Length: 101
Length: 424
Image 1 (cartoon, rainbow over the protein chains, first blue to last red):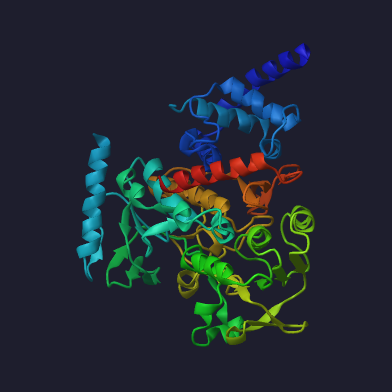
Image 2: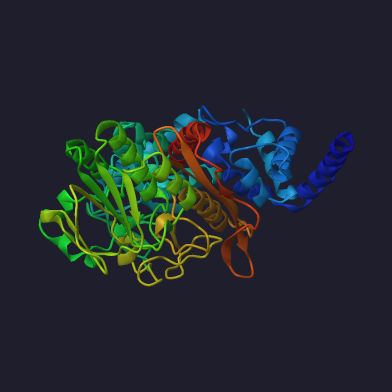
């Protein structure tokens, strides 16, 4: 388990660099806006759904990768997370982390 | 301070819209976008255009209705666990918070060459870019009997949430126990693929509590249930045993509203106490009349990077009116996604920036199999540069393993969030 965590962390660092180097921030904003239908405009959610605005980026990335790998149970996010590359997940998480709560 | 400034700008523009008469509306500086229709796609586009242009783009939303009434969740009004007020949201935050000018009127015509929208009230709106969010209208010509006097007042479609939703509920309340509710479903594509099956569950739950000897008959023109099939069939077999009966391959060819009778292509006539006829659909009249419905004269083909019409320059079409990409449902959630993708593209086009070459968005659709338990279908859609369309991402998406109450709570949270994302 520990090795897996270490690997994930290392992968995250590598992915973060990649995502920031390549993707136009305005396009990342558009990707993130797709999450807003459930998680609120800019990630500021209405009651009953998790807010993403201002959340910790690494926590969000880990959660999404865990959903994607089937490590974390979900009603729907295990299915939606599989539609996004790891790089896209990092980029979108970075966007939400930078929004004010 | 900034917000107050926008407020004033918004109301000033609004006033101009009201007093303009036959003059062309549109003062101030900055590019002008007119949005026709304040549904899930149009209202979202209007809000995000203002947000993402940092209020540099002037946005006028033309919408004849006083308030937004949501189609998603409207089946719960028919089932009786929600009221029409619960699914109604005013438009005023689009003006107060975002400075969208709202003109309460209908569109008569679009002149794409002159870039002018002509309104029923006589005013003309000029635009740099136009967004048509016209929803759906019905192909009444395929059901001749429905064009007779009073037929449309008696037989509800309730496929645009509002007065029809309320009337259908009243008809069910007035129906005697032991009666039959018959609902016909058109061939796909139609707005909200799982909607009719959810409605059958909602009516069945009401009958099971209030009128247990009554029946729900589903008459589907499609071969089989078009969405979440095993989950709906399980609900009908287990929760609503003896109440719901599903019949596929039942294509309605006419309706006799006077006798509450459905006529079919291949099957015997069927009479019911309450009829709910969901007619064949096409893009909304405004889009069709403007020549935008290029696919089979029913749906509007668009460029999926910008949602610009393939038939008219500077005109974008969103939501249920479009010729969908493979695997893309006509849903409120999807329309909200169209609205943002188009808003981002229009901002880029008007501000001289690069249009996002790789849109990715998702669809999430919850259906209530009872007033509390819910099943979902979800998908992720990504632009394919080679095929120039949106495709579902392999391995993504799926449905609920079983109906459950947790997703019932999520479904209500989804509604609160998407209504706020679209309108607040």
